[in-house]
Every structure is written in C-alpha cells, then in structure tokens.
Length: 158
Image 1 (tube, rainbow, N blue to C red):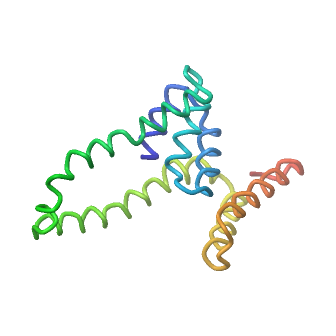
Image 2 (cartoon, rainbow, N blue to C red):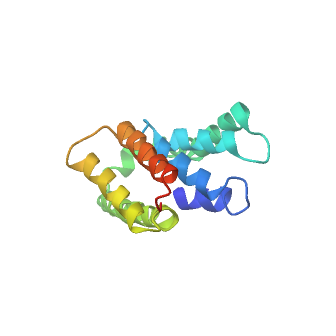
C-alpha cells in the first residue's frame, strides 16, 4: 500500500514528500499503522476535504475494498480453505508479502530518508533499539525525532 499511497498523494502534490515520510514514521509507532496513516494523509492533504472530514473519508476509503472483498468471499470460504490448491496459493501470497514489505522499505523509505552516513547511523541505532533491546516503537520514534532535531539545531548533516 505504501508505494500506491505515495504515488497517489505525493506525485500530484497533495502531500509533501517529507510530510508523507514523517507521517509514515510516526504512524508506525501506533497500533494499526495503516488506519492511522490513512487518517493522517486525509487530514493533511491539500485539496479538500481535509482535517477531520478528510481523515474520516480516507480511513473509510482505505478499508472499504477489503471489507467488500471479505464480505463477498465469506460465503465460499469454508469450501475454499479445504482445497489443496487454495492453501498452496495462500502460502505463496504470505511469502510474497515479505518481498513487498522489503520493496516498500526500500522505496520510498530508504531512498527518501537515507542520504548521508548520519541518516544510516540513526536508522541503524533505531533498528538495534527495536530488535536487540526491545524498546517500544513509540519511544524509538520519539528518540529518533529528538536526535534529528538536535542534529538540525547543531548544523549536523541529516
């Protein structure tokens, strides 16, 4: 979803690239990141509606296709889940999701946010905080924001 959202929101100029990446980073620290990111984009988009109305419209719009698909397939699910071919297809889809997530990490996150060695170092420290020391994601986002603001204030390259 991230590349699709970026293409839809940033390229036409509805949301600035930096604001898009900042909102994405902030929403990753919250439960239901897709829900909160859709609400964020709806609230900050330049053409109307924006604010609360835009947040509600974006949130409903991001989830409506999934709900409609689930509602349409639910009557057939019990039959489909027992078929060997369907189970194999679902395993393949689950495996493909890993590749899609890695692609979303690279573009736009890596290409849009990592420009210097300091950027890479900050990302590496955040990764280590999350994986080695199990620091809560919201705290990693706060620490990253403080580190970035401190770097800007002291004229360090970020």
